[in-house]
Image (tube, rainbow, N blue to C red; front, side, top):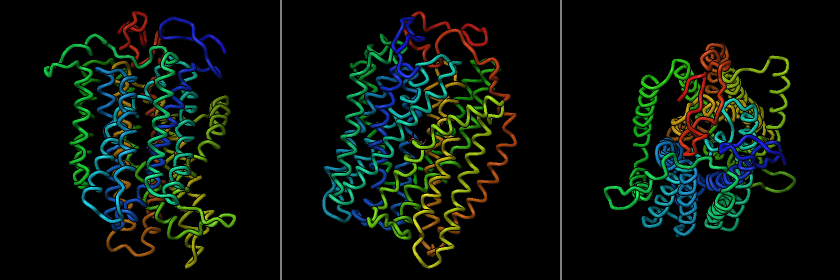
Length: 527
Ligand code: GLN
């Protein structure tokens, strides 16, 4: 334990050199991801084996759900920046998510497409979608709010947080997958709900360790009555509950999700451009533009990476020899392999970056993104090569492990690096929005992933179509990766890292009411 920097000026305890609040966020997000990935590991099988949808329709619903889950964080981020603060948003989101998981369990019903149970299921998904909107971007922003903008512990903090994400991501599919595929679907989905509840308990009980991070900027304004006669805060919660109904309508028309995405993405980018060109200095503007470049790579990265839960999950179920030491491992359990590799490899990557850093050879953020894309391509080619070598036989499990290994290394160059960059490059007041936009681009990735999955197994696809698609995409993404590495020096310049210092707290924290938290300066300019 030691004393460290604090938003309120008070000395506070630390653990492993980091504020203890980091570990509270770690556990809360771990349980949230346990529920998300646990439920998601079962989802494609629930659709094809319980509701008896064909592959094509199942991929469509899966793609719509996984995109919507990442579209809503942009609204959640905006509402937290302007009104709620991240902490209240996370709490509200967790409650919605838990309700959603329990609702899937309760509405299971008999096998087949019974209209009542199917609608109950769609309603449950809508709760999770709205809940994730409030939670995901905001809890990620809160990590950054524990540190000053130029604090060197910031990148390691996101790596530690990312470990929490992946411990949840590893345990969820194992617990929920085994329960769901062996004891009954409701057991698996119910377990996901229990996980989210545990996360909420940690978050609520350990609030003091957050030291005011994520508190609303204008708490009094939140208490003011809205036109409905209730407080502003409760008006937001009411609107959230009503939007569950809206999403419920939308999710039944999965084709519309693509248009919703497009409209949202355009509106968000236009709004961000408006903000940076009207209120920011040239340097901050450059930084946000650099952040937008990184964000723009998300649809490609996640579009390929997210084959994991859909087409790769189905490939594993049908075409891979899954027996390990005499146990026929359920396909959904393989959904935890990626997270397991992250847990094993993240410390090695941390050491590698530091080692390279000391020699002045650490790749810059954009170059890491390029390397991440190249690794995604290599992963696909490994699987395609292995399947081709197996010929008419089942593909040996080692090649599935191989694709996940390369995809995980790619993710480590991409995702935690990107999260950290979002809060570092954002100035106060738009940190939640930028993080939300990061996830919005992930939503586009999940939508693209749905399209790709349908190309692998939809109408007119032969048994080897999946491998042809993987091979073509593998080569293409490697080319894009190389191009990104080539332009990375320009992006690095736009980040103005040499002047990325400040004397007070960090982006997002300027909404905190304490006098110490306002009026911090970046590049010598008072805000
Ligand atoms: N696996 C990470 C998480 O769940 C990243 C997911 C994403 O951004 N698509 O947070």
